[in-house]
Length: 112
Length: 111
Image (tube, rainbow over all chains, first blue to last red; front, top):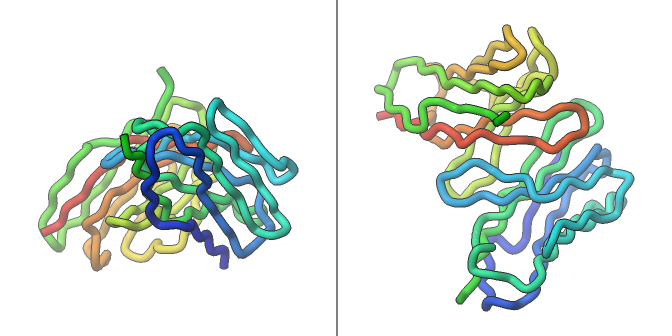
C-alpha cells in the first residue's frame, strides 16, 4: 500500500529565506506527482505537476523535483513571502489503479 | 468559467440521518474523486470514478456511497453507518494526465 510522508509537519521561517519542503513515497510505481497549496478552510490549488519521466518543474519562485527511484520529491520556494503561508500537500497518482494518494502536508508560516 | 462546484459549503445533520453532498464539474473531465480531511490530517480517498457509470472504492469507503450517472456529477452519500462523519469533504476531477482540480469543499457536522 502506497504511503506518502511529508516532513516537516510544520515550518516557520523569516520572510525572504529560501526553503525546501520534502515528500517521500514508498511505492515508486507512480504515474506523476503533484504539489498543492491549501489555505485554511479552502480547497486545494495545484502548484506543480511532475510526470514520472520528468526530473523537475518550475513555476515562478517554485521548483519541484522528483527522484522516482528513491521515492522522493522536494518543493523549493525561493525568496519566501508572508503570502506563501499555507499548508502544502504532495500527492502521487498510481500507475495501476489511478488512485491519487496524499501526504498529511507541511504547514508553512512565513514570519514578516 | 470552468470549475468544480460543491454545495452546500456548510451542512448540519442529526446522527442517524443519511446526507448527500453535491459535486458538479463543467470541465468535461472523465475522472472524479472524493476525499475526506480531518483537522491536521491529509486527504484520505473515499471513492473515485474514472468514467461514467463506473466507480471504485478508495481507502475509507465504509459508510459512504456514490453514483456516477452523468459525466459532470458525482454525488457522495454519507450514510448512518459512517461512525465519524463530521469532517471536511473535498471533491476533485481531472482529465487524463492533467492536474487534479478541486472544489472548495463541504464542511459536514453531525450531532
